[in-house]
Image (spheres, rainbow, N blue to C red):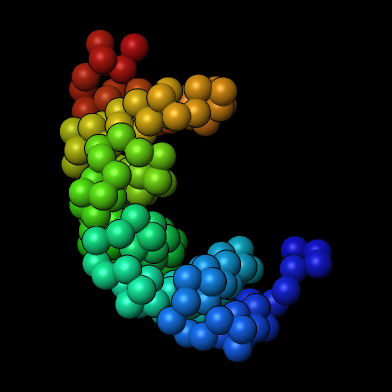
Amino acid sequence: MAGAIPAVELVDQARETFGSDHGAFAAALELGAEQARAAGDLKTARGLQEQALSTWVGIHGERHLKVADSHGRLGALLQDDGAVDAAENHLLRALAIARQTAGPVHASLLEVNTNLAAIHRRRGRLSEAAALLQTVVDIRRLEFPEQQDALGGTLEDLSDVLTAAGQHQRAA
């Protein structure tokens, strides 16, 4: 990323400026985690995201959309790193918190539902995967109708899962 502040420097600046119990610090940790993830350094990304989650919980408690988002980010990282059981736990936690705080159809649940559907699909739990992908379709149609490519990709994934589950008529 040209012109990007390195993750470690960004986190240090945020800590010095805001303190380690501030939302800007947690956001810097998450940005650092994304930079590390993009660079393929999943160990660093995971450590930064775990610290961000802890910071968000310290600021907002367990029941806040920022905490749900942070669980979802950590779940995605863990999934990338092959820690599927831990990923599933964080994604389920993210989903539960987000549903309690934002309702069942909310844009913050897109990635969580998509990642959890991938885990269910990988484990052969096709009906659960299909239900989550249908939720993603519903959210995309409601919140992002202009993003037809993303909707099309999700519909294709849903069709593949339904076909694999033997639900050919629903897949059509």
